[in-house]
Length: 312
Image 1 (cartoon, helix red, strand yellow):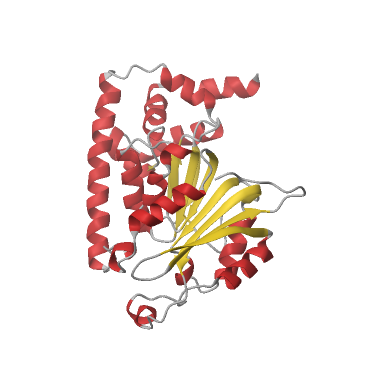
Image 2 (cartoon, rainbow, N blue to C red; image 1 turned 30 degrees about the horizontal axis):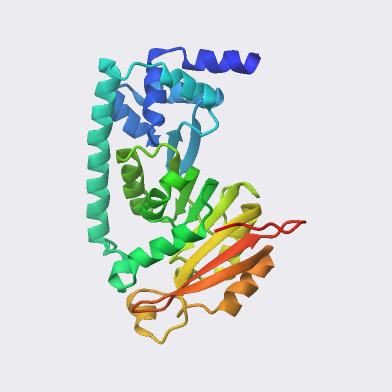
């Protein structure tokens, strides 16, 4: 009862209800919320602290900032929000201000991409069969997935594609510019069950065995240590969970190592199987996706005490 009362007290204030309504639609940092609500940073920081302590918001640090969002398990927060009138003038004004800020955030991030030469799509740039890759990924996942982690999420395209199939999605990437675009994309399309955060794929700030599925799409060929990256992916995967890896098969395009900063000229099945085996995962199947460069999809399962069979 004490926990319930603490949560009710945390929500029982107009500004905190506005913060909950905003953070249920996507992740925002304090400076964003200051701009949207027009209140001082110390005041909003105090309100956010109370909401986090009450379990109604989750705080995710990222460099000098921290991002706030309603967690998927905060049932009371969602019950409270369901009772807020959609046509409330103050809440509507907050939504409009948030939409303007998200658009500006995307513009700034896009300009940064252009300045640093990162405004491109690798699948398109390499002439890879994007539609076929997407179809293979969708076909390899179970019809419904609980929690999914996308490592190297970039601007959130894969998370958005899988939004209707997963209960909760988390994306991690090292690039703040990409994450800024990803957050804007997810907010604009109303994917409140998807979130992204900055993280090192070799040291994921995530609990052991906390995801039902993990994806790595066109990530490993940039990795200094693919085995270590897969070890971390395996660590956070639940027993019986599925890992999907999409990457280049061995090729002779030496120019990619220089022009596109690839660290590896593709991977063969034996390399991937060996690295996966060291993580406690076993390759269930693999397939080639034909294109200008050969692409492979590897589907692996986290080993359990008793064999687990997934239907695809």
